[in-house]
Image 1: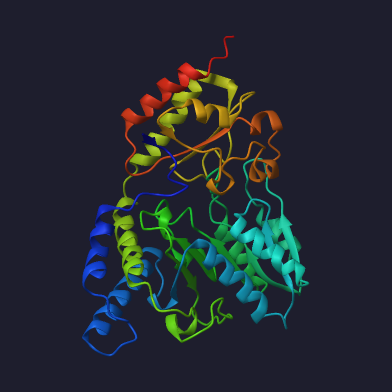
Image 2 (image 1 turned 135 degrees about the vertical axis):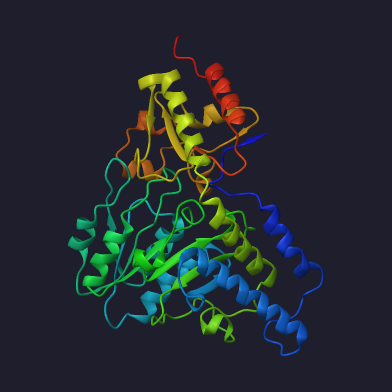
Amino acid sequence: MIYLDYNATTPIDKEVADAMLPYLYGNFGNPSSSHEWGIAAKNAIIKAREQVALLLNCSSEEIVFTSGGSESNNTVIKGAAFSFRNKGNHIITSQVEHPAIIRPCNFLKKLGYEISYIPVDKYGMVNPADVEKLLTGETILVTIMHSNNETGTVQPIEEIAQICKRHDVLFHTDASQSVGKVPINLESLGVDFLTVAGHKLYAPKGIGALYIRNGIDIEPLIHGAGHERGRRAGTENIVFDVALGKACEVSMAALKNTGIGQLTEYFYSSLKEIYGDKIHLNGHPEKRLPNTLNISFIGRNGHDILESLNGVAASTGSACHAGLRTISPVLEAMNVSEEVGRGAVRFSLGRGTTKDEIDTVLEKMNKIIDWSN
């Protein structure tokens, strides 16, 4: 099996798995306990929080461990909505967000909140000027993803953050797909909240983090005891917290390796050489995640292509939409035609991808996609 679906999820890195083992078999203490088992567990979480903060260039006190990207997103959107209702009831997002953003916003709309959805250009890019136009005195939050999970397009987050800061509006970015793939520097990025999903950067599923800038207090999504400095109740998941910390540490070194980007470009240039104008790149040609290649095979069906690619794991877009045979909402928002959009296949490479594997996929595709007949 050749795995080219790293945007859907990643395998657990061996170093990450090794870091988890002591907390599976021995160090089982409750971090809230004052005895040596509890202290050992607490110290493990402190270290993990520091490892996450180091990757993102922020203070460890600004990191909250969660169960994943969806919980982090829900925490920000609902927390900001409930905490700042006295200021206003307006939230701005984009048309190409993940369902973990769109659906909480739809939920709030039922409660009387006003939600504005910013359109995108043909590359799936948000225009910062459009954000500024939609801001009103009632706006309490803007949430724009850092990079798109389907196309890999990276948004102009710093520019949007500067606009939000000028208007004294909180800004959140869902960086689930970006962390570990491209450098994230919170000191310069300028956001108030940032979402991390562990299983996108070689940690287990079921762990994530949320950056909350110092000085901001929002209502917790989960109420209970005072865990995570009162921002997320529930006894800490030491095993997975440690895993995420180690994954962030490993990612710091992996970010220096440009091999994935070069391999993705080789894949794309090879496809263009074979198919020419019969394929279409979905997403920005340059401002895109280095591992992501969303290609439409014009006039074909992406699902049919994947079914014929025996032994190759890829997708037609978001894994959350697997099985759908209609054009994805992201491509639809980019005004991609039905003929082009239905032929979309997303290939997302990872640390384990080799050139031999890409060559094998190219050979397979050359056999199953034939425009000569």
